[in-house]
Length: 305
Image (cartoon, rainbow, N blue to C red; front, side, top):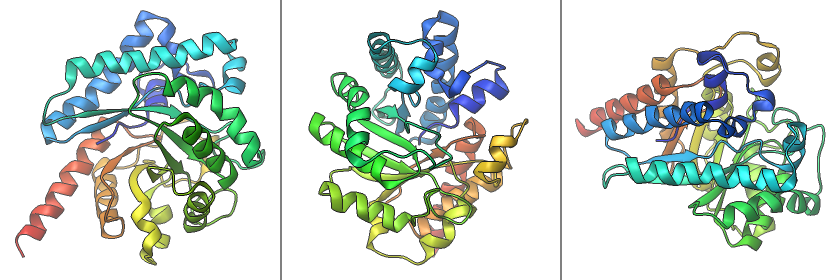
């Protein structure tokens, strides 16, 4: 299991202002830290109930230089914020981990620009240099790995993997997709994964899909191919809306959690190595619960034949 949409939950369920989706800024106060810890607790409680492990990501998706400066962080205070986010999860793991529910800690990193638009791009070299600071900071902590989320063009992904390789820390790469199953930059998911692997010697531990509804990308998965073996996780959106429509939305579209759970669970027909499942924008603990109920129903039905 992994968790759901932290920032959308904070904004729409908790009524918290989260400028630029920079949830790590809440770690500055005791009340903010408590809010984030309760988010982790909801999902970890579910993991205990379902008897599975859980992957928890730090709230540092927007804790890189450009976004940090928008909130008044210096390089040093931003590095401290990344470290504090990891420290919170280390302490959380000490309290919540059990032999049946192991907790994997991922240092989350996000795109330099807008996750929904591929209008501002870097070269591979520029991406490696930009993300190296945050990745190096994470690599010096007790994270199990770093994870890049909501990437929308290939060169940034390659640069991130190269920075992680230089820091000798494992990394996962998660691409976001439009309603046609392609990256916002136009590449197919297959092209993105195969190009990233080819340019980095296959260093990424695995790939994921996030911030897209299952209906947006199930079609391309049906075509099959060895590249699907590189996808180990999905963090899907609750909403079927496009990225452009979500940008304009004033209200949360949390979809139908039961239907969502079924749609994520059936992706295992194509993603045979998918073993990390959870949600992204619009999802919360209800969606995670329904994913695992659906997985158990499907597995139970298979056992009858």
